[in-house]
Image 1 (cartoon, rainbow over the protein chains, first blue to last red):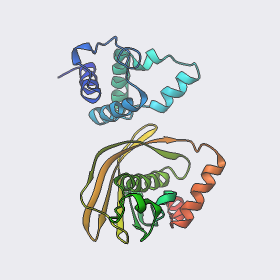
Image 2 (image 1 turned 180 degrees about the horizontal axis):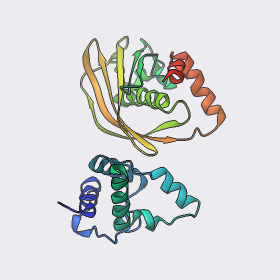
Image 3 (image 1 turned 180 degrees about the vertical axis):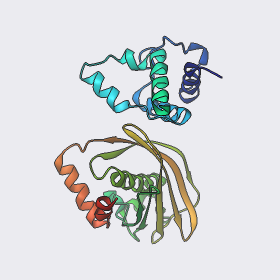
Length: 93
Length: 157
């Protein structure tokens, strides 16, 4: 069974036509991979479907805009993967 | 339907909040400045306006699901296919179905038929945002009244 990160990286590679080998756990989706907000909607859709969750993008965006969180907390892929795991666990709880 | 004013939906025919599907209809006008250019002597409804028709139908579905509290804006169109020509006087039967309810966005499947035959379909992404100002919302409410948007269904749902 592939890890959450592998699933996310594969989704990003396929959705944004980014070479899979350049996508690392420490990659920042926006700053390192150059993914814009519209492309991220495609990624979010694919992640939502793959994991049966709803990424709280609006809440995250609001927290970043309000200075309560940094983009690294949500868009560095290892952090994103950890949050997906938490959402999946919360769904099953 | 008034192409030059982007009034592409005439009437909401059916809204099913449970199944998350809306049906609408629109009559392509016999005359429009759009046809003067598209095309001289051979008037056809432009494909981009068929996309807009599906997007507006999708938008009304989302406005209903969001209970008129937020506004959907077209963000992406995928796999748009135009299967036949649409001419002045044709009647479009439009449908939009919610495929995914995301956070701040939604994905729909839009489609249109004419006399039961497939006209076009596409997967449509819409960003969902607050109404930008009260005037915008009032305009949408007036449009809703014009096209028979079932406000009562929102209260009942």
